[in-house]
Image 1: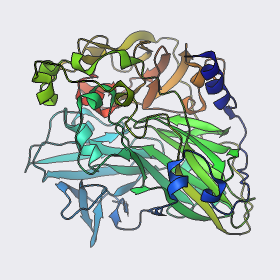
Image 2 (image 1 turned 90 degrees about the vertical axis):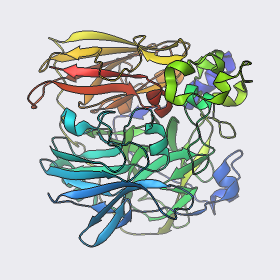
Image 3 (image 1 turned 30 degrees about the vertical axis):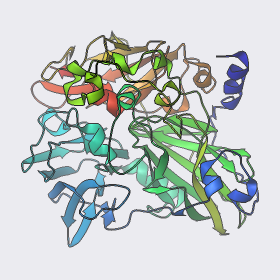
Image 4 (image 1 turned 180 degrees about the horizontal axis):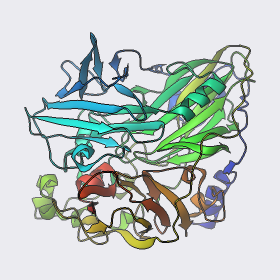
Length: 548
């Protein structure tokens, strides 16, 4: 990388996050198009429609089971046109839901029967929820077409936004891409206190934002996709490309899920005339932070969630604020490794005709690492917030949000984990997933620290642990664009300060996390640790974890 490029990347991320929340101050402009921002797809093409908001039924409809058993059918959606072609349907109290947003109270018992009406195996993983092996839905046992599987578990987790999605080994990427996923909102006292303090109403002033990039309705992974991950040409926000949301002069809460197969976003705000704006970070994967943090931007990798506030209380009618993913270096350092080197024989289910050709296929290095017509790390507006009403609003963001007790790492043992590419496969500790094997063995009711190291000639990997939340202790040798965002002497980002279930590790970087393996479940339990780049996961960048 040239010094000029390094300086630019450093300048783009220079402000990071501050300890105190602040207001978003938009600059008056007639419309995003009038601002003439160069190279922005959504500005050039204008907003295509209103942001979809989940209602009391239908797609992502808000459903509170209240302890009632649910039957969830995995099926191809008849007559689906465009965005998603598969989903989970639920009939409840006379209403039909597709991928319902489950509203669950902490301590509530959940009872769900999964019926597989697909033509291939599937299983549901409750991403971020701390459940036992039977209910985790991790790769095994897959539910065959026409079969059923029953889940029953108590919700032990903090209030936060979690999600559910398929996890059948080798088929996960395609099923999630086609639309088989939904949200889980766990409620607790901290959530209720925040809503009361800011007068937040789900579906109105509290809005989920589901980000997913796509390049057509059907999932067709190329050799390049299997090496780098699938990157689409369009970004959908709640199913719409370039949507707008009409807002008033008040605080809005946005609960962001990155449901993309592989793409990382560098989220930030700006006014319509190009002025960068701040937002307030409330929480991460597993709940609210101890205190709010004012941020200028945040990286969000596949499967990660962030919880943010946008303060428009000083905005005037006619103002527009844009949520964007900003330019960054995606660090595809694996570009030197040709696709032809992939071990198709070992990967079996991912073999392609090209792999069997006598002459290796030509490799388009310009496109393969960055996503074709929309390279990863490219600027694009995601959502337009259009101020249409001026109201009296006096609420202030609380100084304290929740209590986070640091994990005591005094008695912890450290476990080294290496991420890299060898012999045509992405690997963890030079191993790939093998059904029934658990290379990571942990003694129950103990604490471990995991030092996750990513090789320099690699790419970013979003590492997810099933069954447990963890705390990020330290980042070392971070690339400049990440180091510029650190908020403490341990190299941590603002998004590292809460409880996590997924953490992004960049090439050349080491991230140390702390995990308390205390379990309330009797007997041996097994989980998964894997990269949440879905093509990497399906390709075997996953290890079994035994806790006994």
